[in-house]
Length: 309
Image (cartoon, one colour):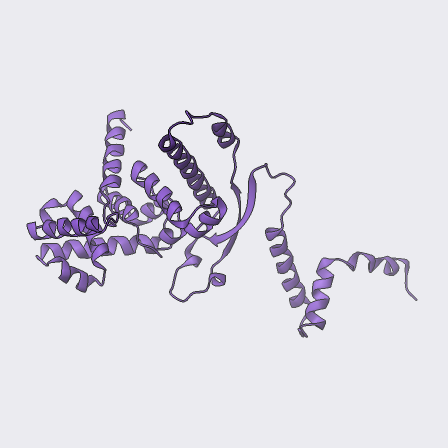
């Protein structure tokens, strides 16, 4: 005979977790320990709470976004599917009160160039805000994600990132650069400069938001190129020995020229000049042009020394 507690006990079991457990056992024919199945259900429930959190305390202008999870588990490898990277849910401040107020301050309205500059600066601030906010929450946004979030072209997003890094000498935590999927002359300059100042690779990784493996890769190439320069190899040979494209070698030569100018022979400098003229003739921005960020880094260091920090 069923007792009174038994009659009420089943009422509380008609929930989402019980429905998932029943589905696994019946529809997917998952046979095994009920305890194991219950653990799987609990994990599914955790994912559900993570991807569909309560939003009643979320401020206006903030959106929930699923992006790549930062950390050592997010190592990049060719052929690796997007689903194989960890997923991190982040709340991104897409629209802020300060941005709305900035739009309320009108410009002259007569100078299209000035209006475009103002729009560029505002969009650049948005891109930086989104990247830094995601990184603080353990996520890494890609250029494509920024393009979708901001409704801007990928090349425009790249302009925002490059301009900010060249002006400030600070690296932005863009997914491709942090996981070393891309080639950023700006990041090379920042990482190598911190190394030349005596900072250890783990500290550089923390300061720039890069993985330690990416930092070691940059510094390893930088060290090999310096060794080859000391041996007197030309650029073509350096590219063959290191397995790096001439564009990448050129980026490192600019950095070497800033810190070890005596390592570069006249032939190396002539090669850089010829390359820049050739690219300039094709009306393309020199990919190895890291002088702006190097200048920004040096100016930043000088200001800190003058202020006694």
